[in-house]
Image 1 (cartoon, rainbow, N blue to C red):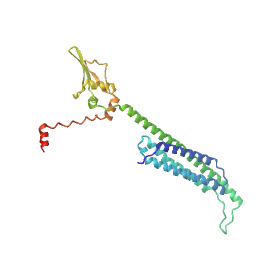
Image 2 (cartoon, rainbow, N blue to C red):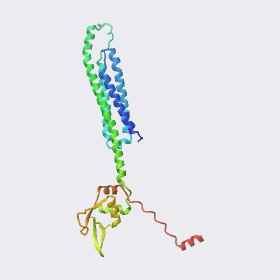
Image 3 (cartoon, one colour):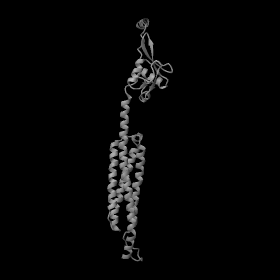
Image 4 (cartoon, one colour):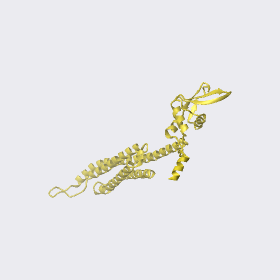
Length: 282
């Protein structure tokens, strides 16, 4: 997918909203006399609507063919833009209907009676309510288009901010990579039944960790996990009876996000002296 400047796209959609708002106000305030004057006043409004619809379709295509589609929440924005293409198209249709209802002046076919002034007045009286209704509907569709563009522009900005915050939060909570011992310890303790014990030995308390599958967890590894708040022990129970160890939410995420740090490459085995001697003679 091609790269796309999403903040710029959001601003362009917002600019479209302002364009629809300006056109809506022009449609609401249009003043005309049925006939040639109405064609002169309403025709440019129709052309502007078509231009805005074409631009809206370009914005929809750019977003629908960009990495934005992988952003959570993008589906709602794309669906909204698609519906706005319909709304703005309907606004153009309403303006076209207003022009179609507009009675134009012209000469009748030869042999037919010419239109009288009373006929012209009657035609205008019939056309004006119909044209007004179509213009009102067009203004409504343009208002929907403007509102929807504002919604989409805000949605894109919000989606980007949420994604940025999630990425930043993930970086903050990921922490340093787990060592192989820490990873194995978390894996064993995640299965449950891990306990922390203290048993007397020669008058001194010896603390040890016991897992259900016998995985050896040194006390140093356990304390490193506690320091990073990846595990916690139930201190309401005596150490002599065993304190249940629980893997925290951070511990579960760390186990899912991290892989054990790669062990250092094994040193090459030394070549026996006899072999070196044989190679030297070759």
